[in-house]
Image (tube, rainbow, N blue to C red; front, side, top):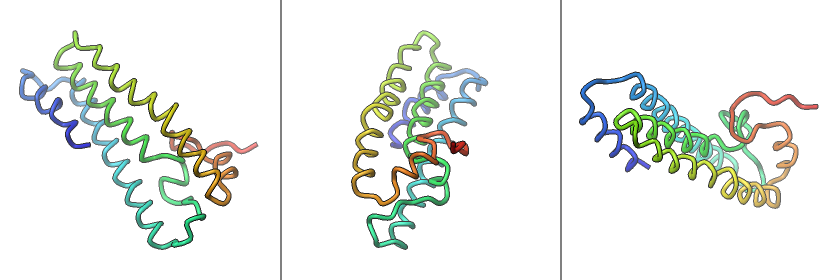
Length: 142
């Protein structure tokens, strides 16, 4: 994941000024890295405390998002795109990489993971109804 900083470093070293778009991209990337790291750590700690593999995590970031680690990864790549765009506005097509990455998570990784979770985790259907897929906002339960 940290290989993604190469384009950021390149743009910052080549850019004559630190623009608002570079700041925004760096902020989004940093938020994404922190979010993914915290989510992964929470999952690691949960698995150590709960040897029963059929129990689903419902604490920390996982209380508000079923895939906060994936959200972090998505945010990181969109942030990288914004930094690259700041360095070269004609490089807008680099956004296709972030878009492709987002699509992979939304249409392949998450559906496959949730299919597996529904099969092996007790209460996953209820958790899915109560918790948003990515965005960590409380979900209204009807």
